[in-house]
Length: 382
Ligand code: CA
Image (cartoon, rainbow, N blue to C red; front, side, top):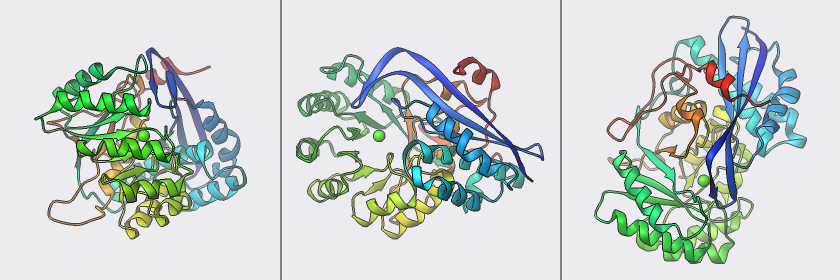
């Protein structure tokens, strides 16, 4: 089998109501999708993670100009060989960011092809499923005004709970006082309900503020505190982990085993969060999983992309071992972004559904998804 071509699709969808996370206002959702085609009629889908403020054209150009020439004529089943080829040939201008996201998209598509070729779901190719159902957590609590939205956020928490979520991640990073006030209102609203919260500041603060917030939130018994400081401040992460009682999570803005080596060697995180569409794909996730296991750190993938990224994330989550085995271990959970995103609901035939508060991992070959080309045409940019 040989790769004959790559089709690149850049999608954009303006939001009817822009929302903010700590780094800025998101006015559209976008996606960089790739379809790897072969001479045997099998094709695979992949996605490069496009952060809310990131132009999706960057990864699309990398795939088109830099990766395509490395792939045409290659055997798509050589996932490891091709990963190293793509990484080495982009090293001097890549290693992080959108270049590695582009590699991720291609890599996910190659695993989709491999699964279809072997007639087996990707998690089987990764060594099998430790779990075939995963608990999702609601990511939301974005701001539509900015500050002082505690009451609306508290109502949102109750809506997630009614939809079946008992785990929720609150976006913070709008100023420590506003963050504390919002959490107080949310905490009051969910009191007595079986709900566990996480928080995510998207690296809004320096160490002193991040610590002050963390200390003020100790009473909430958080499942984790995500991206407390900027990804470059690995020593800051280590300090948070030493001084705060809740688990520290991070890694969505880190890439490949080389990047995660820094985080893990420094003892920076309790929970490593590679994004499969950004860390280097499923091949890189496999490297990171082995590395994290050797450091006693739980891998819990981050996902904020389309239905393709969600599917890739679910296969990896199925195949992630727990870091600390016991009768009742802490299992990885699926990030389920609840913001408006047509590429999640409309891009594939059977979007992820909650069944009694759980998401089931498909056992169909490859990613196990059927992409709706009409949706791609509808949201195609340019
Ligand atoms: Ca995050």
